[in-house]
Image 1 (tube, rainbow, N blue to C red):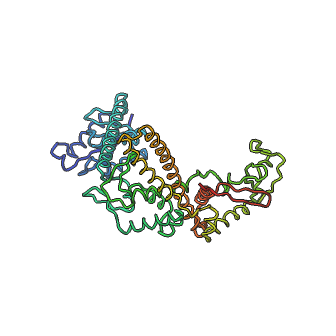
Image 2 (cartoon, rainbow, N blue to C red):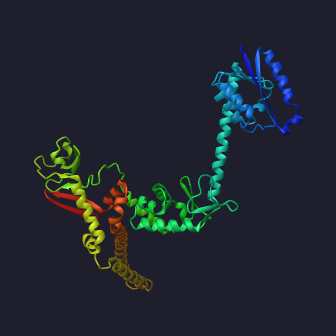
Image 3 (cartoon, rainbow, N blue to C red):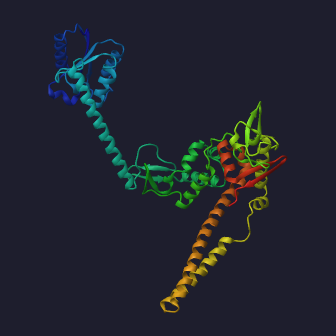
Amino acid sequence: MFIKAGLYARVSTDIQLEGYSIDAQKEFLLNYAKSKGFTEYEYYIDGGYSGKDLNRPAIQKLIQDVKQNAIDAVMVFKLDRISRSQKDTLYLIEEIFNKYNVGFISMRENFDTTSPFGKAMIGVLSVFAQLERETILERTRIGIRKRAESGLWRGGGKIPFPYTYDKEKGILIPVPEQVEILNKMISLYLSGKSFRYIGQIVNMDERLVQQRLLSITNTGVIPYKNEIFEGLHEAVVSKELYEEILRVNKLRSKVKFEKHYLLSGKIICGHCGAKYRYQKSGKRLILYCYSRQKSKPRFVKDPNCKNKSWDAFEIEHIVIEQLFSMSLNEDLFKETFNLTKVNVISEMETRKEKINKQIENLLKFISEGIVVEETSKKIKELEKEREIINIKLANNIQREKDMKISHDIVKNISQTWNYMSFSEQRSIIEHLIDYVEIDNDKVSIFYNIS
């Protein structure tokens, strides 16, 4: 048998005419509590408060008393007195009253959670509440997607840098000062600077720098989930420039950095062809040929290999010093990467133009009925040659882009290396260096040259 009941009553100014005044509710609740055998009771009264949420003093005091086991049951005249929100009602019943073993009774609906029927009703209400939540969520998603389809900013979350939001028009508006900062960040990044270095220059967290540089919204589009929609806002980065930013980022993030050391997987034995491995020896970090490490036989190329072991920092120092040397000497960079002065792309473009002209003339011959079979054969040969040139052109244009990125990285590496994170340093090694060969005291560096 319950001992003490918490009698909750609420009235808002727009409900006075319904006849459920505070005094009326108190009288109904007291008589009902006595009829149910409660020997003690306490009123919790919210006069002049809406039931739209739980931001009410008496309901908050009621919740605290329930948590402190000060009452054994909560009684209301009608369900909507405790809340007009189904979500809040369920929260009170499931997360507060049931959790602390407190019964809940509503007189008008004859709703009593201490009875089997009342408990079953909680389950039914929960199902409908979940359905309502999912329906609202689905409508919200549809609304957001419709906005994105229309080119409007989808709303919610933070406004993307370097924009502000025009609520009346529903579109993003570039902020000139922020656009200037973004352009500076892009210039620094494409010249080989790291996210960390750029962050120090513009006073911004490096993760924020990365996020803002790689934001596709900058190109005038609205991303939503896995879809991209044309936006109504002004692009602050051209699509071509954005593709270049992505390309550079992909090259500099080529490998997932599960590698723990700068040259992991990059050092080859000049005697047997096996890879070198890093191994701790006290406070030292030593590089050994895998053929001398019998614990992993699958990596052994020659069990009798006697190639020299090195302190890891010595090999890494040799590599970094050579990169720094190329940074300070343009001619050394060109010599190392075998850059030719002959403009291969220009020569290919010229040859392609000649082929197009030849094909055009041969088509005229065909239209005039001149040696049709031989002319068609010649056209096919020229078209095949043009196709090969197109492939070579694409490869050479790609190579030039790679070389430009390599040049930009190397050009600034002596200034930026110490500001980079290990991951960024490792990505540069992946981009520039194919492998390092150790032959006793001789160390040779082989670069990624297309």
